[in-house]
Structure formats: C-alpha cells, structure tokens
Image (cartoon, rainbow, N blue to C red):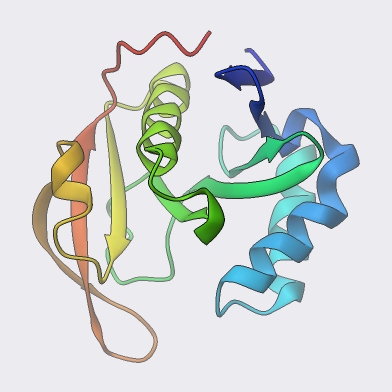
Amino acid sequence: MTSRCWVGKILEIINIREHPEYLDRAVDYFASKWWVPRIVYQDAISHSITTDSPLPRWYLTLKGDTIIGSFGLINNDFNSRQDLYPWLCALYVEESERGHALGARLLEYGRAEAAKLGFNKLYISTGHIGYYERYGCEYIGNSYGADSEPSRIYEIATEWSNGFE
C-alpha cells in the first residue's frame, strides 16, 4: 500500500501507521481540532500503528512540514450505529487552506483507502447539511452519541477514479 500521496506539487497525505514518527504531532493535531480528549487520540493512534487489523487508520495532510488537514478511518465514530463501518472521521482542513477543494480531496483519498482495505461503503457522522452531498454522499438517517443528540449519517461508495497512486 502506498504510504504517501502527493496532491499537487506541495501537499502530501501520510498514513500515520506507516509514518509513526508523526505520532505525537498527529495526536496533538487531532486533539486540538476536536472535542475528544488527547488521551483518547494517544491511545487510538498509537495502537493503530501496531495492530494487524485493517482499522483504525489516521492521516495527516502536510504542506511542507506544516499539518494543514486530517482525517481518520475508524470502526465507530462514537455513535449508536455500530452496525455500520468504516467511518471517515475527523475530516479537517485549516481555515487558511479552505476554498481549494482540499476537503474533497481528503474525502476521495479516504474512499480510495477504504476500497483498498476491501470496504464497499464509507460512512460519515456529522452535523453538516449540504457539504457531503456535494461529493456524492447520501443521507441515510441519524445516529445518537453519548449526549443523546442526533447526528446525520452519510453513506458513499468507495469506488474512486482520481488516481491517488
């Protein structure tokens, strides 16, 4: 499996499992962007490096040496729909880098990675309405988190053709 993906001339997507030297930076980055405590990311990402299981996987987008985006592929996104997987989680693009379709590229790369791992579909849990639909995701219902609040679930096939190899 390819461990690095060049997006354009200056952006690179890396898989933390294949680049464990980024572990601490990845943990800090994910924890700084989401409500999940740092210890949860530390535990999840460090074990993702050593497991034989296909999931979880965590990715960073680099512009030079600067992290400008992220996402993960996981078994469950802290929600009630444990019958669905894998989940694309923690998709984030720095505000200064938005407006250049980088989020769409990360979604496509996540689809490609899920396909390589043998999954036919990918799921997303979000409160966003309108964003994921632009990229072919279909709203299939709600799930519920520990706070009992509903979250929208989107599904998308893992077929892809953007040539990220």
